[in-house]
Length: 115
Image (tube, rainbow, N blue to C red):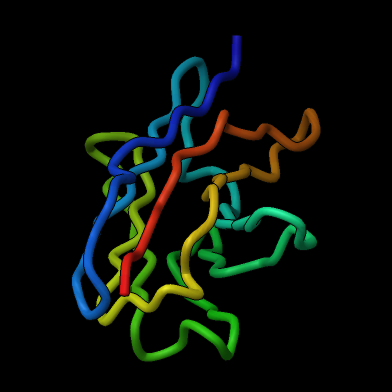
């Protein structure tokens, strides 16, 4: 069974950093593109970052130069390093893999950035 699980969320002060991890089980994550999305209360889900199966990153303008997406193929994970966090980054963060069998979403991890 194909499964994704996010971890690494938490509470951090403005200007701080967090590293989110998206771990796959039941399939090989580096065969597929992976995206991170986030959703804040009362707002639409927003795309944050993408990494191609070749490792090419892409970022939403709101996080470019602050967030870094990367793969660790030995761990079968994709990470999102988030620096210089702002209160507006507060949201539930989800990873999704674009597999041959359809999208596979994780359950999400909460990131809260205080003033």
